[in-house]
Length: 131
Length: 136
Image 1 (tube, rainbow over the protein chains, first blue to last red):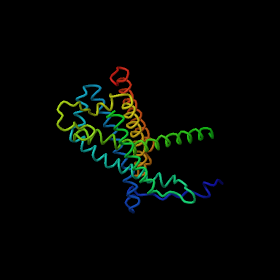
Image 2: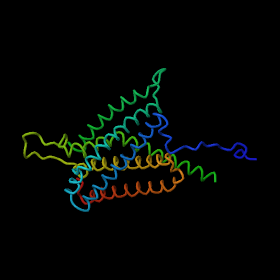
Image 3: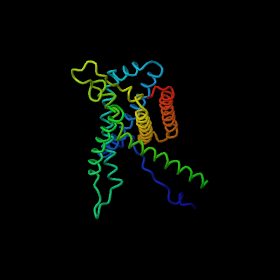
Image 4: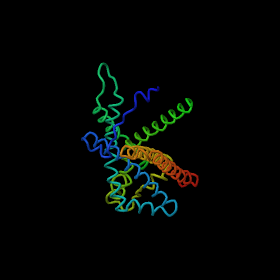
């Protein structure tokens, strides 16, 4: 008799609303849903480029100035920042750095990476727009 | 059978590795990209604002990000392709956690199709513009 038969795997059936059971699960689900905005913004930008490729540069720029696109992008910006913050915190939790006898805390990784984010953002603007 | 499992495990590791890389890209590069295209440009903020009192100063717009120079085009490709992969991959996994586990294969197929088409289209435009000399 195989182990699978002797020790059948018991899986608890989860309701599709399991993420409302406690705050931790809910925040996890909010974090996961930020990915939808990340993906939609990327697809939206590709669509904007297709307007330029099949029409003119003005079509692309008008698309970026469309109030609906601005509104969606602002929401996407908030969710992307939330994604960044939670990602940085997770980095600190998953790969803590050992310094002497102590290990770095997740919030330290969050602060350090936010500073890095600001530096990278300024560097990107300087390199791709101002230079 | 064992070799097949090993190959699948290696493929999974690769896909999750790209997912993590996309997560880093979306965290570090996507915010500044959204700021430039959706906040700074439409609202006339730095770096797309014209200096006050200067009517004839040349101002740049987000099209410069794409065709200004090769580095800008690379920035666009890495940011959009990485974010698209990460976003779709993570969202399809989220849907399986919300009661759609039995449609996992279909979700993966649709997800990878969107990722593949999106990245190919983006790469095609950028390469075509570069070969035409549109990208400086």
